[in-house]
Length: 120
Image (cartoon, rainbow, N blue to C red; front, side, top):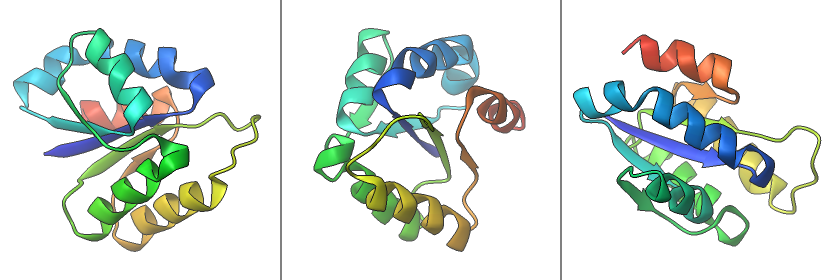
C-alpha cells in the first residue's frame, strides 16, 4: 500500500506527530510513504522512510496527483491550512479532484486521517 503525505507549512508538525502516533501501523502494514519534498524531509527527520518528490509549489502536488491517476497511490493524507494563501492552489485542487475521480481516500486533517489509517 502506498500513502501520500502532504502538509502545508503550518501543518507539517501536525503531520509528523500524526505519523509518529501511527508509526506502528505504518511499519506493521509495510506502508510505503511518498511525499512532497519539504513534508518528506520533516518525516525523515522523525525517522520515517519516505520517497520524496518535488516541493508542492514546484510541482510535487502534481507529481503525486499523477500517481493517483495512474493507480499507484492508494490513499492521500493532505493536511491543508485552510486559512493560508497558496500559490499552487490549482495543483492542490487538481490533486483533490483526481482523488475523487479515481475513488482514492483523501484525508485533509488528522481526525479523518486517523479514521482511514485505523481502517487498515
